Length: 559
Ligand code: NOJ
Image (cartoon, rainbow, N blue to C red; front, side, top):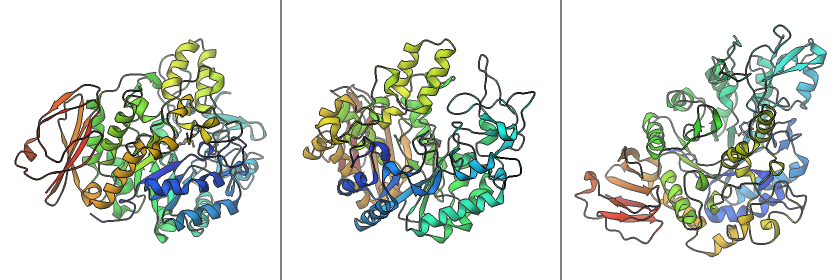
């Protein structure tokens, strides 16, 4: 397997709006990020992934971009951004930016022109279709509720928006559009950044049939997923992007890809295909969703979770590569979701989850606050939420007669705002995030859960993450070893082996609050010498049968 820096890195995601405010307007900003770079260096991360900081009317918090080459006023200036990049590089860290090119904002110059007339030079930068019998061109639903098509008076036809109506989809069929996007990418790379996270990048090629999706009873719109996810020209476009610009730089790329299978991921990431370095899949994130989708809550099972991880760990060949994540700005907090956020078990289960993830093969991503064990926040009222996906869904379903209390229950579990409450820095007002009024309320548990307390306590979740990251730097096996699952049918323990040459790692994680006996697997029966690399409880180096404590994690190394 080829060794590269991005396989050996740990990446930290910053959602700038919620990270650190420096000018008391209640909104995180770039100078705020600069203030906290030493904190990130202390944690030991290698790369920062910065969610969008470009000019935007903020219909979807910056994922609706009106100018790719300007910085959003609320976040600072281009000088601030340049200073941030220099400060990141000075500390030996790298920066990857968010590339959102499936769509722009409807306030982007291209779209404002395009919507004026059918013969406007920018018309073909977007996707237009005539209506069908006075209705939308097809029945596709937007990810943020309602139809995925919006009528445009001036041209008397519809434009496609897979997300909000303020996020029109770009037309990648148009070579002019592709070349504009590639020049913009090059412009950022020439500023010295170290790569991109690419937003829903497997949506950019649409099936030209624009056929109706299958209607589910009782719903006005249908999913068009099979017509736009991993569409017919997706590999051509990514290969073209790679050859036109990416391949000229020593950078990393990760594509966000809802609906991607490991077989497809292999095609996107295999070295000799020259597309991307890795993808984010969503299979483990979809585990607690029922047939009605994200808001249809259902219990998850550890056996299924392990099956998904094992499939991805074993299916991607040595020439392809995995990303590893529990959290991002769109997902509920992991300790509330797959761990236990009660007072008794929050810390211990957060450390266990970190162990389970960071010991697998792939590049691990940490989302801001995850290293502090930040939890979901159940706001009492819908008024407290800000997220467009949450609000659109709620209002649409209340209007259709659904029970608002039931909807709020689902929102408590799944809303993206769970991830977006401000980072809890200390015990001062608004958790030290801002001196003003935060744009989204701080989680009331900040008096106990915050960075200051974590930094002070050598046994904290922060220090545990720091140790996991440091271990990766010392043991190639954590990065490059192969993966073999153990106890696949066990409903409580997630255990696996990593192997590199003569070396072996045994990773054991108890996903429950129960004490469970663990029997040493056959592969380790003859082992005489072992070393405990990390555990969230006191334990010694000797590998023998033992009783796992609630949410206990242990990693042993032998050779
Ligand atoms: C995925 C991003 O992660 C999400 O936050 C955003 O709303 C959509 N793509 C649309 O850009």
